[in-house]
Image (cartoon, rainbow, N blue to C red; front, side, top):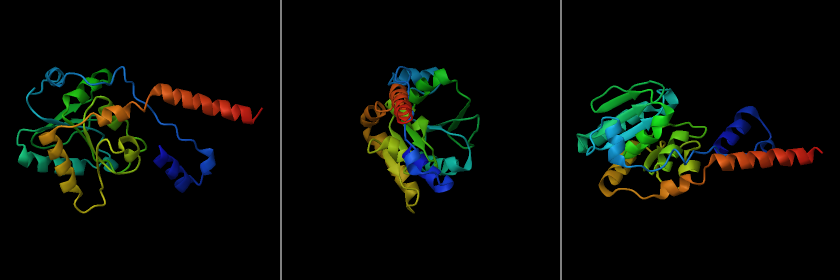
Length: 215
């Protein structure tokens, strides 16, 4: 990401001209919109219920403390809503939270599609692949406006500024807006810009350019 490039320059003093940004991709043959009710049923979830998904470890920079506070706030308005927690086997304790533990890679597309909203509260991300995977599945995303995340989401999701004193309320309002009004397919369309084929092509072109320079 451009953010990672800036961090390499800031922390390591590397010449910016020696760093080329090539974005990772997502496998759109695996991550794509599916029937939400069927996917909920696959994981034993209430097909009529609402579910917020978070895919992250409990490392401090992932800010699961914010995730918990936001969910508790939303739960006051939607008492039956559930939070699905996945990531490195880490859990969050609390009413309405379903800790799914470690989920196999091949099951992740179905899990994303089981969610009504994808929530990502991290304050530091080198890229943020789960956000892109959720977008590729057509799931509306509510994420922090931090580090590399704006590069992925752009204006195709809800970006919440963690430096704003009202950030908890802003997360809450964004989630309520989706629950009440639904969402668009903007995120899905944006995700199509990120492919492994594009990454491979740009990497090949970069190597080819460097080879020509040294011939």
